[in-house]
Length: 303
Ligand SMILES: C[S@@+](CC[C@H](N)C(=O)[O-])C[C@H]1O[C@@H](n2cnc3c(N)ncnc32)[C@H](O)[C@@H]1O
Image (cartoon, rainbow, N blue to C red; front, side, top):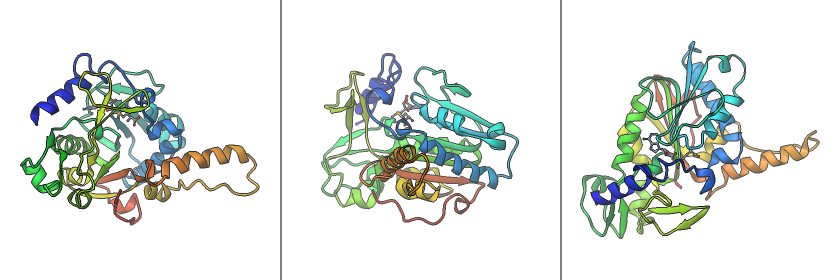
């Protein structure tokens, strides 16, 4: 069980590991920041709400943890405008090689103190965790993924610890984890009985091997992460969150740049697609900022 976590960690983050040597999602799978600038635009609306709730501080952070190729951090930097842009400090955090992204500070460790918005976009699914087969016993499994009909499972504790640490770095503002995942009710019901551990290489799902040639990932128990980090939080779908931030993607008749608007609408539709990116979870914590000032009441996430 512990051995599988160590093998997974070495395969991704060892000296010649998949991410250590600089592999990026763009070469192996599609993530929302690669779709276009629209996710960054929505996050800037959220950041503006955080900024307002904080009383427009002289320095406003946007921190992208697990930044990969830096596409999200870069799009946030280049899409920011007005007075917010002048106070904005964008930091990308990744354990892989530093990238050169205009206007973005690159670091391999999380900042100690964040005043603004910290985002982990498809970060937690890449945090290795123990894999179990059959009716194993473990306190995390007992609490979050009890045996039932389970054949395989992942013990999400390392993700809980990683997320709790990240949220604790936010002195004032908000922290947002965006990822594919599951909730206890569905785990208990046996919907993930085969586990979710998977591997990707060159755009294809492949048989997992621990030799550093593929990305290794598993769904995130975002409900467990929420409880571990604590404080005030909501867990909603990306589909609903994007609409609440004004991203709905309708094209009006008579639109002067109809083709451009239609292309944008199709990118937004991809970000909001049910069963696809729209079914990702948004786990949002407020720190010194009421979550209700950031998002309106939305249905709880049930992927
Ligand atoms: C699946 S990729 C996501 C990249 C990007 N956020 C995106 O959505 O396109 C996960 C990234 O998290 C990084 N990562 C994993 N653990 C990390 C840690 N503890 N601190 C910083 N980055 C980490 C990996 O190196 C990898 O680049």
